[in-house]
Amino acid sequence: QTEYYSVESEKKTEHIINTNEIPFDIFETIFFHISRYEEWFLLEDSDENNHFLIRHKLQRTPIVDQLIILLNAILGQPQRTRQSKIVLTHDIDNLLKFRSRTQIFRKIGGHLLRRRRLSDIPRLVRDYYRSSWLGKDDPYDNLEWLLSRPAMGDKYLFLIVGGNHPLDPPVLTDEQLHYLVEAGRKNGYEIGLHPSYLSHTNASILRNEYERLEGITRKPLINSRQHFLHIDIKITPNLLIDLGIQHDFTLGYSRHVGFRCGTGFPYSLYSFHTEKALDLICHPLAFMDSSCFHEAKSDGELFQSIYHDFFTQNKSNGNLVVNFHNQFFDTASYYDIPLAKMYEQLLRDFAGP
Image (tube, rainbow, N blue to C red; front, side, top):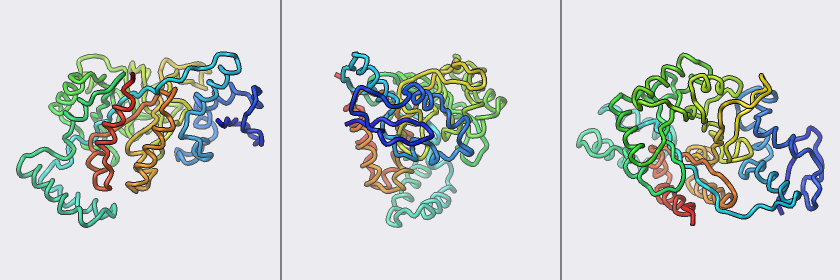
């Protein structure tokens, strides 16, 4: 039995609906989630643990979609069950794991700081030696495999081209960007901007990064996703619109798996400043590899459990925007997570009829 929840200030006991009557304002509830009302008016900081859906452990299923299915059923228009659609995206933050011959000391320090197994340090050193001294493939250099996997539907490759915040990766060269753009296009990916951490409220930073990537792609950019999903819901959308961005893929959780907007389907973002829909389509992010890792608290078995439960639970009637980073396949392997096999199986499972 599906459970349906309202967002009224006074909690009601009849939150489970077993009849054709809805004991709350269904349109108010839907609007609350997709407009991001709580992020406009109710939350004092950006800690996603304070979000309504996470606090009530409701983020794993698209509750807005469930309400729409319920409404259609009450109106005599039941929805036919169909397989969920996967929208495949990749953020390319770190193209290489080892960028210099002296970086091994920092990598070992980071390995120890994250309390990874001491037994993995020899492997880390071997990878460094193969990459930095023998000229073999870097552990993050998996673009040919990653982008060539058979996948149905739309595919997007988001590239970061600037930034000077500690959470921003090293800036890619023009040569590296040309390589990424050509690799994406060759495999049917739309190229999108991945604005740096501090761009979310800075029009100048955002424009500089847009113009640099546009100079590489030689065509206007219309797709974007903020780095670290760092967004100010009141400011960032308008900055993107001013650049000509039409589709944004940012609204998901950076530390949890699930539906930040209560839906996985695209829709027009709303502005409470103008009380109108914006000329920007939101493509809500449902699953991100790093988010699953954070929610699992670096526990490899728990990561796999969250992963399998999420995609099993949402295998029907959904639209799932997923994000896999090229570097995370290497990171996951240090926690015995067979992410490459899981990724390939996911694309097979959602390949359609």
